[in-house]
Length: 115
Image (cartoon, one colour):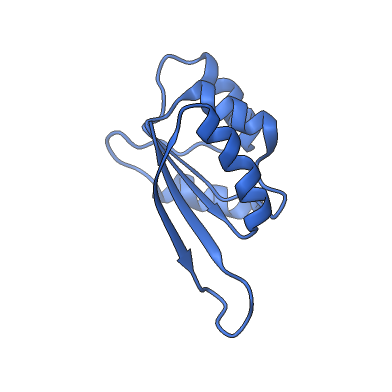
């Protein structure tokens, strides 16, 4: 996690049957998930402007969660990462543009991918 306090808050509030909060970097989490039998049903990624990159896309494909939500603030890196995920067997189901910063050129893109 990029903000350590956020991890502590998530772990303390995300409780319940079938729920588990994990404090790890994306790459650490995915490397572990690849070798575990229990696979997540949903993965949400919200990377910085550089996107997730080739290694994370490869690991996401190997984890093969049925649903993947990608939140992006950069259309160029989103396009690069989406190409790798689509080539790995994900299908684009939904695409939403969200104007979080009105009167600026910044738009968030939310993409829902499914296997």
